[in-house]
Image 1 (cartoon, rainbow, N blue to C red):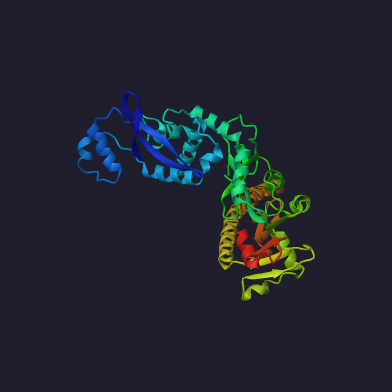
Image 2 (image 1 turned 90 degrees about the vertical axis):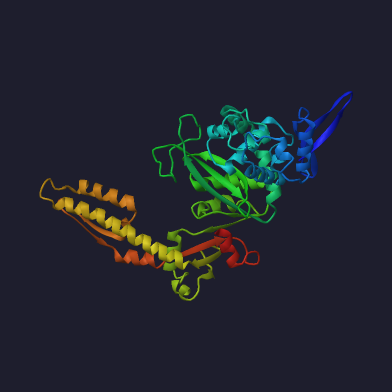
Length: 430
């Protein structure tokens, strides 16, 4: 930041406060304000201060501080955004819409809040930082912010392509996962009733997927109908990688609930050059144990081993055991068993009470079903339901079978060992 004196023909020169900044490889200059109306002694005091002088006299004598705004966090975040070149990725030329989008990005980093609250933090009367003044958007309202988001949406494909060129390359790891959020309102065409990760099954929701590079840096996002299953979002990501980003060789990493056997056969194997890292589900791991392919005694002295199975030709299976996870699963299972027993005992007591006892297989079964559906422990109990009684006990056989696999998970991958070691493959999945 510096003070520039600009000749003005026959009129007195203009005194301008300016700053230099880098945009890509170019150094640009912008004028922050006109100081021509200031008296000479105040301009010279400010000039000396900007050159490294002390804020003490004469600067303190030349100015009266009437208001201060928090600025350091704004400067740090906005400066980082500009060093990353994100402004030019949003749009090559500066515009009102680009400045509004930058304000929303910086505002999200500094203090996540609603659009209405962001407007209040930018407005001249209610501002809480220098962000609105620095970007020249102090006069914005919430409607204009939403319009700026529509402007941004039209540029999504170009922005994602630019990010992909920066962060992805042939043979790179690409991480993919999905989440969801419930939706308030009735006018979103994507909002549907679906599996709610928020536990809000009474609300419609939207599902969104995120592609990142191996370090977790976001590259692309996509929004789906709220009733879309995780695996059904994979094909669109494969097409995006191949068609939009022009990547022929990548390793897609996703969890076992998303990159399923069906998706591997129908989507991933149909795309030459596309490899994957995922994990097996519980029933598949149990099958490996039952057929003798996986011997849990392998992990008495070590926590990682690579095995092969005819059910997965040309693929690697890396078996891991996490002692901390094993302990946590044991603890959680016991808590769920006890909670289930407590509720089942209430049902049993209802069949034994003297006044208005619970009767009928259907009524008793309905009560029991609600309990088992809540705690998901039905496979670990033996139940006896009659018209006038109900008995239960733990199924020690199924509990022991599940406990034997506590902390064990199996990574499934098509990536060759010469490309990724077992340890690096596990780390990539984690």
